[in-house]
Image (tube, rainbow, N blue to C red; front, side):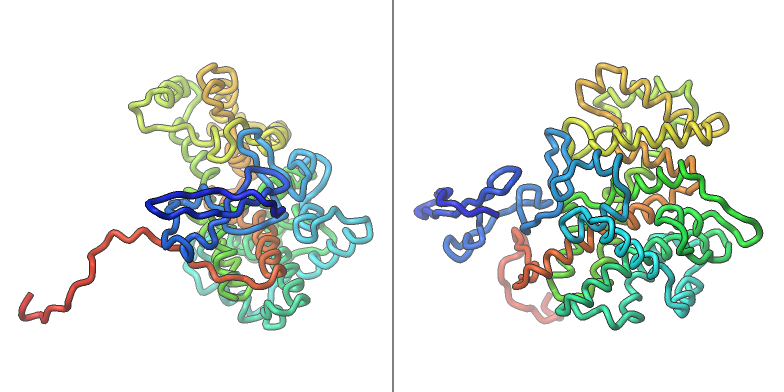
Length: 431
């Protein structure tokens, strides 16, 4: 953050305050209201914190009007096309793209931490067979602090580093085991000779009774899903991780808090909602009916997977994800899957319809990721856990950045109180 001599003047009643302004490297200027309550005896009201900067960060920048997403200054489309997930993880964690030796060392450290403590298997078997995979993930990730005591001291930089590597390495294993448990199949151990995405697919879909070869097209598509969801600035789950971390909680507890927040359908469930919409439409011949409903202001129906709260132009991640969707559907076909047939036709119609173009309702990353995961064979209950796998590195990077800054202030939002004023207690017999 760059300080300058400019101030913003705030006047209310007989009070005039001079509030310092800061200029970021990118994005709008920021008015610093840290002293607003102390000097003016007032504070701001901003439900959803959509106009409030709660932290300073060098990790991710988003410009919704331009459809721009940068990780450490690098455009997401360049990273998704030319890089791979673990290289992006290194970039998010350490601030620069790695050299060849640095990348080899980082990949080795992650790969050699993918197995879980053997006693943790008991946690999975303690859940009901029909438990949602996100419930299992939330519980098991939170329990990691009971097994990895040597990486819970947030004041030790080396322990923070070890915890970061462990979570990037083990969360995919936890997600895969939650998937296997829900299907009643045996757990498949990770293999050190496979890349990150291939390892995850093998742990999800292989069985001991036969060999399983990971298709490189599917592995590449999975890697892109991980990459495109790695971080997204100060969203609800990332803010939750930072808020939990501000109390000094251990890193495993903080990531578990992020997983819990991501589970909300308004946050991590968008691609699942998209697939449920495709199922509701049912067949290609019903698409015009639902298109008409989407255009009707009096109809509550909305096309899920189109448009984005942050991106007011287009979702830069969707361009790359569409390419993966085309590759995956070209490999696996859509002939026997009505939902995928509906998705392809709905995409075609929406991209050609002037109404959707004028409203900038383009297919977003959730539309395409849902299509890909459905084609791969994942049930919708696994969509959000896969999102959590992807986002783990973003949460960790943001948490580490906050801790590394030092002098962390515990989060303490204020409120606009509208309850009863002070009143005296009345004995029960007199009420």
